[in-house]
Length: 448
Image (tube, rainbow, N blue to C red; front, side, top):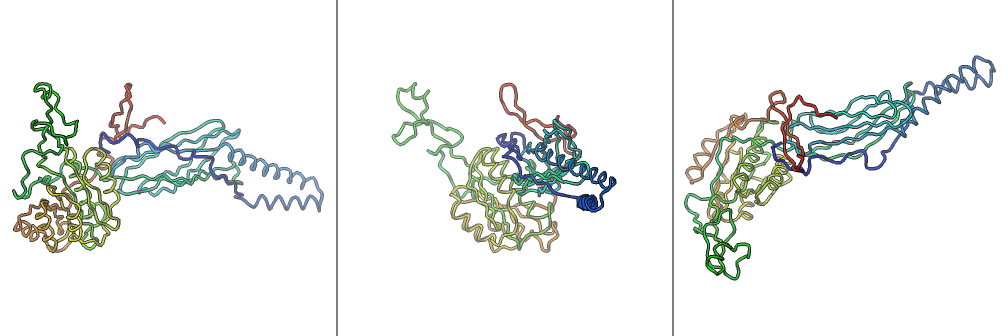
């Protein structure tokens, strides 16, 4: 997780406290019940002190076990809280569990049965808690794979010390968690610029609001009032408004080729994961430069996000990238055609693809005719275990006047392993009420 991540999702509500859970008491050992029935029959048919003594002893044991189980069913409860819901691959996923026993009898064993599907995360444990007390602990794991997962549903199991009855508390709630791709600050490719080989020329000044004001001019009736430059207005005694420089860098569209037919590799070594890491890094870099970034990824579930600026846009793009899969049937040519219908003149397109075909290059020419500059990022197929070469495709792109970069497997880098990471990020509230991100060493375990 990056420093400055949104603290709005820092913690999630306690799950397990949305009303009482469903509680079930089950008979685990049937043999004591059979013996009890046998002794009862023997005491009736063959009256003897031995049978009566055994009947009272076994019956008392059975009664104590049942009352113990009933006490735990009424007084035992638990909750779990996700501490950091904004996590990336390589970050630590951490939950706080609280086990409370308000009954008169201790819970000698309590088992947490968890049905979460987060890869590498196991929350199931066995604890014990005394009567009128509570126990609290944390479970954590390093996030291994991006995607959408569930924490829960889960159960709380306990029982009497004789093992006759089992008490189960069912917590059917499941919390959704999205593990985002990591952001790598050093990528082997530059950001595309907002010009198309000198073919697109913007006027020096624009009347659309941009990042920087270039000069002032006379006020016109259609100008917004917040454009008024008050120092100049006061100096000249007439209304003047700011005139803005158009941002020559332009907006950026990130187009990911997620057609299943052209993908190579598995897991973190696949072209799919490298494309996602490239898109995440490029988006973060462009947003830091105050450029608007959009995303078009055509897997089986298309993800299209129109260009925007700011931290909120980064959350949108990272969420979309966490969910994309390279399992689509949409070809790159069709993706470029769709992009030509939604991208505006003066924007740039960064196209990330592992293909070695060239039938989509005419689409780039069509984009150029619309005033949309393109830069192609080719994923080198041989380095991912594929046949052929991307050199011919790069040469063809250069002949048509399009710039390209080639990325080989492993050049982007992968998230650091737990033993090599310096720490993980958490949020703290200062005395003035400000929320700040603080890096905590991996070995530190905050008090529960």
